[in-house]
Image 1 (spheres, rainbow, N blue to C red):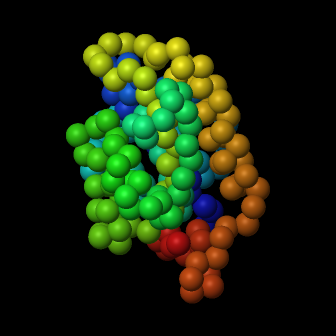
Image 2: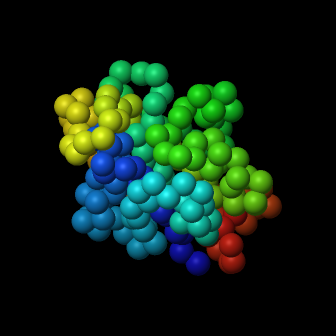
Image 3: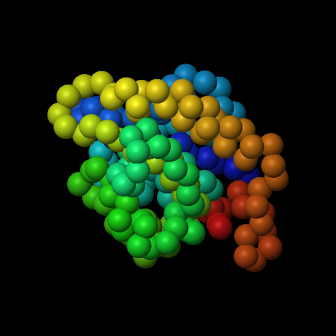
Length: 174
C-alpha cells in the first residue's frame, strides 16, 4: 500500500495571522504534490483534527503558533520528540491546545507521525489579512512543506519497530 501523507493547514481566517495555516494549505492544494498526498484545510477543527490524521503515515500540521519568538519565525519539530514542556507552552490559537490534540492522539492509539510547522504570529485580533512579517514568510513555508513532502516521497518508507515497512498492509504504523 502506498504511503499516505496529510498536510493539514489550520487556522481562523477571521483572526489575522491565525489564517496562515489555511492559506499555506490552499497554495499547496493547487500544486501536484504526488500520489498519496492529501492537503486539507482544518480551520479551527480542534479535536476533530484527529480524524483527519489518524489513518495517515505522516501528518504535517501548519499553524500559527505562539512560541514566544519574533513574528514570522518558522519552527519545525516532530511532535513525538518535542519536549512536553515546550508543547504545553506552545499554545495553538484555537479552543483546543496543540498539546491536548497530541496527548489525545497518543492515548487513543493514533500512531501517525506528526510534524509541526509553526509560524509565530504578530496579530491574532479579529481582522482579515496577515501582518507583514507573517505574509513575508508565506511563500517560504509553502516551499518548506513542499520540499518535506518531496523528500519523503523520494525516500523509502521508514521501518517500524517490528521491522515492517510503514505504509504496507493495513493501518499506518510508526
